[in-house]
Amino acid sequence: MTDDDHSLAGNVASLTGLAHQKLTDVPSVVARLDRISRVAAALGPLGEDDGMACFARLYLQITRDVLKAYDDRSLFRCGDFVIELDVAFAQRYLDAIHAHGTAGERAPACWEILFDRRQEAGIDPWRFAATGVNAHVNFDLAFALLDVWEKFPDAPFGTTDAQYDDYRAINTIFERNMDSLCQEFDAPWSDVGGHDSIFDKAGNVLGDLLVVGTRDLAWTFAERMWRHRDERDYRAVPLATLDKVATGFARALI
Image (cartoon, rainbow, N blue to C red):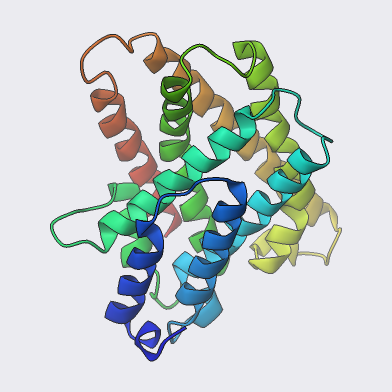
């Protein structure tokens, strides 16, 4: 951490620098997310409630659990597919951070909303975190799948069905973390009636359903685009469309 990290311009410059180097494996993803969350949280007046810090902290927790589940062979069965997807997925987040802080470039609009409003007072931490999840899942995830399939066109990790099973297994990690994440980011339903109240449990179930539904949609979009992979610029129109949809959700959240 440097003194420059306490000014907006210096903080953005530091985050842009952290996003410059390409990721190589999941431990590098964990290390980079940890640094991003710490640097973003150094910016006042919001500190740990800074919008970028909120999302990076949530993302870090989920990624650590993905790596643990992979290492202990407790959840995934399709070789290194989840590892490759995790790296490709995180790289798209870093690319957005880098574009935001680089002159002459812009991140996708769904990310720019979070980056531009990260220090805005009056926005609850859970809204910041949810806005990041929205951009990353509703926009980035389908293209991260394409990145992996293009890198490994011969499906060395197993059949598409086997990959999908591991992809859906990540939902279990979200489910395990949903209650603690809602508590950490002060989701309004987590305080109604106290912890483990019917409202708290209902909010967690709704969160789980949203994660499962949006991740399933991302897979479906990726499969549809993949069928047209031999066409020139086959990603272009879906890229603009998904960014527009995710941007609409982001505006509703914050």
